[in-house]
Image (cartoon, rainbow, N blue to C red):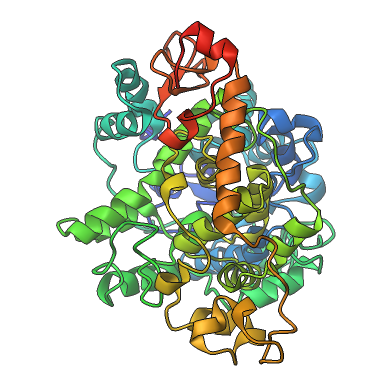
Length: 573
């Protein structure tokens, strides 16, 4: 299914290039480059059909039974799309006198695959090129497109582009079968997955189909201001029109391919990369070393493979940053083999864990809006709401507070991040929230202390971060800024800032661990390995046999959680 050259092409032949979120660029776009390298015309196409995402993004969510919406409609990511698509459309016109065609609204009522086939037939296209993806909804679309086009005599050519190495090339489960822990097995198999492909340049030529009116934005296929056809949805973050959110977020992000490469150069040349330490705990505070490239990678304005080849990979800092970038491959490997990753715990023993805070109640709403009574948490949640972005360190800080301190279901936090992040990514988001709740492959996050007062000494030592995002506390002295309840009655802001949702953070975290132990104690013995570790569910695609995959289990979860049945069975955990 990888890209291959085509011979005996007639000059009038048309090739469609199906572009998706993650592909919206000219440079290092294998599908576009390969199609443009053949004689004939190239038709770049983007399709918008959130109904299919709702139906296929997570098998357990099919039909909306869980009440969770994993589509990107109404999200911060969709708010960025009009400007991003317009930028790509403008670049196509500037460099090639071409345009981006958008399939939306009534044109995709019968699904993206059917719409692409109909467009291909109307243009007389002989091939459809696309960059491979691994989200369940996208794999469904790819499979359906291949089936329809095979019957119609149109060739579908799928290229490797989004990841460093496609998971099918990496013998990861082979290493798992030899006894390696999943995380180590991933890196072992990933490095054996062949060479990372070379980045390709923007095409020299990319002539549009002769029938396209290239004097109009999007070749007249969509409204230039709102290219999604249907009525503008309300923002799932603020409840306001999504166009208002788009205008606000456009002040935070320059959504062009040129800007993406400038940001990469800034990170490489102005010291951010040189200071990078590859740790969500150490890369915190006023001298943050994060690249802020994630929205550009997510939208596809910048290729991670291109960034790989542009980086000086000899320095230890660059190696750590690139290894962190490769975590995206790790997340998509998980989503490929555990397609219900957004909603189903990987560790079977925690399926019935008790949660203390329901989605939509006052405590959860206070967390979402940044009114928890803890200034560091509130500053981060308000920054997320205003900009669509959070540094990785702060993502963990607010995640730990929600799951461990408020006892809220990790899926509620995951869904909020899905809605509010401009770099919203189903695979990465699912993997990280599984880890945040100790239900994923790794439980190491439980050992990191992000107490919103103690951690503030490192994350916000000057208090500038809190003063910016929680201005009602700006006049408090630094010693009281991160713990305003210590201020005397009548001091500035002492009477207007909300009371703490949780007074004893450490006790709340201990209670979360206790509930995890209780869940393990009630779980059947088949949920554990012979040495007492948790078992991950075993994907049917793994080629392995047995009750599950052994996952290292933190000592705090293994102590004090045995019931009489497990004791009598001799299975310790």
